[in-house]
Image (tube, rainbow over all chains, first blue to last red; front, side, top):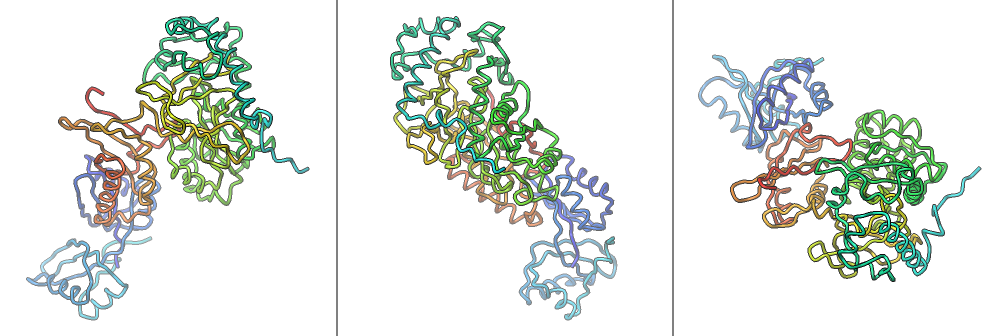
Length: 142
Length: 440
């Protein structure tokens, strides 16, 4: 599983910039960023270096920040590449809370999913031939 | 040497039989009215207007014949028109903040200050404090009565007093730990900030600190907030009531039996009136608290309308004190928000918030006008542990809080989840309501 950093933001001008600056000041480099918004608040989800330490630094400064485990899967960049993987998750009764794509090239795409996980999802995906993305493929720790 | 536990600071006064106490009240009230009338032009005028003189006070029931004194009267008397003693006898001056109008200046003679210290010291006795106790006063010192009032109480009891005043919260925690503070006196919002700061600093004050009691007042606090402070610090919570116009903290204090706050009835006579009709309410009914001072020399007050909403509890208290209690304040007649025609007290909103463990205790209410209607926005924060990654849970929390408020207040409230830094942390009185409505 990948450790995703989530930061709670008010839906106000300048908040995303302030959050990014705080992460930069915490010495962490961001590799991906997805912002989900509602009418009055948003959450910024990111994969960055040293996510746990970064979350602690942000919390100490008064931000609401949390680290959540998310699933990273590399799927072939062909029609149905993603559908096949999601169908498999459905078959094994795993629910997807949200998901997004972070990289794309001619051969493959990396997709991130927040799933209901009993701890076996990654192993079962690998067994079925899917390629799991490891943390060190995206960010560094320590 | 084992020191004796002081149960009552002034046993002969605190446990005086009620009929004797009422006799004392009448005797002192007569003296006070005569003193006020002879020395303050305002009382000569207002008594004359009502067609009464101090001689018309023959029983405590006669009090209702006398005119009220309002906050506006006190502002109009600025600076010292209500003083009943010459300047040489005034030992100190306090003043209420003038943020909402002209400041109100109150004088104290040396005797007034002594009585004040004694009133507060009775509360120190209520939390089992003694000359052996260390009291940390984290109320602000200055024109505000909190700091010096609690300080005087500590000195009257013979405690070791640490006058930290408010601010520099980490140092407050450090002193509390290193100097083995037994009793903390401050506003409830500041007590909570001190507790949270201690926990953030890596301490568990409930088990690691010596502290056994807090004496908190000067701003409203819900029962849940009091419980949270008591649990986090591991202490007895003592609610202290007071107001600078009348004296300061110590007008009433809460004993270990809870269930209300003991009025210092040898010093103050309390009535409850209906703020609309100005008539006394029935026994046990809620209304506006009206206070007549019985011993105050520098600024004697006759029937001062406090605007605080409470009721008088007649039942005797198991602690043995004969002085009656007022109930925990429901708010102020002028704090009461009229939202779309419905009366709402900020304390009711706070009560609902504290029933949600997912929500932090800090909050702010913003009132605006939206077309012909009032719009209420409640800004709250989630606690640090809340799983903020899950928008569904955040939305669900908003919906549950909104519907709980709606059913409690009969008014719909827009909930806004905010970042922690949005709501100002309090080092004194917390500003909970921001009214931006037109014409308000």
